Each structure stands twice: as structure tokens, then as C-alpha cells.
Image (cartoon, rainbow, N blue to C red; front, side):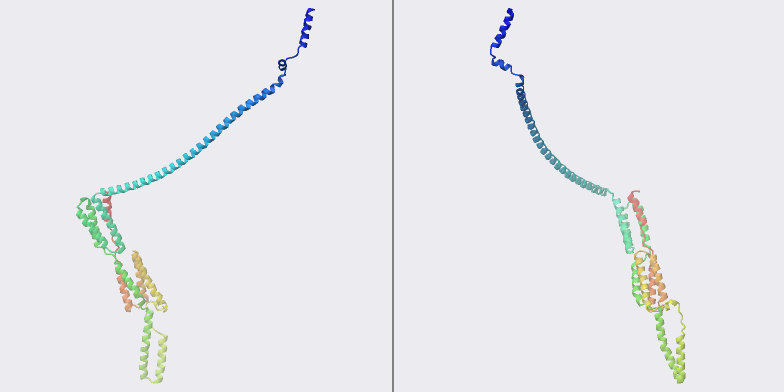
Length: 356
């Protein structure tokens, strides 16, 4: 019973006492403080994020500035590298040109040394060979033996002065060629060309066979008239008239003469000009053949000229006889031998130059 009383007393005491502020705050629910805490945490976290973002932006700005500076430096380095490459290329080109000049100078120096190192006999052989070849060309151009004779005599004298047994083979070959040139009978080309030029000028004055026949007919008719006049002095008048008519008619109907070339007598007067031009053309062709060293063609043209002269032109005329004499002279001049060659001497010189 006493316990019940104590319990009741305690309940009465608790209900009777008023509640304190601390106890009231302790009794507030947790839902009031949770949003505040979350907001504070969010604000702190946002500050941290903002600070970190600022640091990152600063780092990015610094890196971008550094990258720009490095890009400028790279461009400068690339420009310097290009200039260095250009300078190197120019220097290389200069070095290559200097090397080319040095190589050329070296080649020239080697040739000079080789020329200076040749022996006196080798130089003599080369000089004689070049002089003989030049003389051979001059003789072919001028159709004269004088260049060959001069070159061979000069070579002979130089070999005699050298007195080298090694050059005896060359000396013997030159002696043989010299004797061969001295005894050679070549075509007198300048004289032959002069003869042909004279014939070309004379061609326009040559009389044709048909022209001589016309002149003979003109000479015969006055003679016949004179003989008829003599007969008329003896015979009576009516006999004279009748006889004159009969003689004139008979001689006009029939004439007997010897013609070796019938086609020459059938030439028309205007064909004489063409015949003379053909004759001059043959002579000019012969002249060109001689200048081109085509002796056979020249001889063929001269034979054709001889045939034309004997066939179509009067052989008894003085101009024709003069043309035939010139033609005979031209044919005799064209029978000479060609310019002799110095093959023996050149072969001996080539053998000596090669050191065989």
C-alpha cells in the first residue's frame, strides 16, 4: 500500500512541475536540423568545387599560354630550320660547282701532263700523221698533187733529222708513197673545166647540117640562072623560054644529095635552139660530174656531146671542127687517174702511234 502511495506521489510531482527550455529543445524533432546540416554541407562542398574549378581553369589558362609560347617557339625553330636547309642547299650547290671545276681542272692538268710526258718521237709521229691527212684532204679538194708532195717531203726531212731506228718503217713507207705520187698521172681538172667552158660558149655558134643545105641551095640557084642565060644567048627565043621552063620544073621536082643522118635534115628551124641548149646541158652535166669526182658520168656526157656534134652539126664548118678539137682535148684530159692515197704511210704511222 505504501508503494502505491509513492507511485502516485511521483506522478503528482511530475505533472505538477513546469518544463524547462533545454528540455524543450532536446525534445525538438531531428527533421528540423537535417535540412540545415545538408545545406551547410552543400555550401561547403560547392565552395570546395568552385575553388577546385578555379584552380583547374587557372592551370588550363597557364597551359594554354605555355602552349601558345611553345607554338611560337616551334614556328621560329621551323623557320630557322628552313633557312638552315636553304643555306645548306646553297652551300652544297657551291661545293658541287667547285668540285666540278676542280675535276675539270684535274682532267686538263692530266691531259697537259700526258702531253708533256710524251716522248719526242711520239710527238713527231702524231705531227706527221696529222699533216699527211690534211694534205690528203687538200689534194682531193683542189685535184692537185702539190699538197701531197709538200707534206711527204717535209715528213721525209723530219724523219731524216730524227735518225731513230724505230721510225725506219715509217720512213720507208713515206719514201714509197712519195715515188708513187711523183709518177702519178691525174686528171687536170682546172684545164678540163676551162675546155668545157669554151665549148659552152661555142655551142651557140655551131652551124647545123640543115642550115648548110639551105645555104647551098641558095648558092646553086644563081648558078643555074647564069647557065640558062648562056644557053638563051645561043638558042632562039622560043627555044629559050621552053627550055628554061623544063629545066626549072625538073630541078624543082627532083634533087639528089647524100645525107648520112636523115633525122638531121628533118629538123625544123626552131628545133635548132633546143638542140644547142641540149648540147650545153650535156657539157654542164659533165662539168658537175667532174667537180663531184664522178669521172665515169663525165665521160658518158662527153660521149653524148660527141654524138650530137657529129650527127646534127656541119662537120666541114670551122666552128664545128674547133668544137671537135676541144672535145678531143677534154676526153684526153679526163683519162687521168684519181688522186693517189697515202694509205701505206698512214698505216705505218698508226702502227707506230699505237706502240705495236
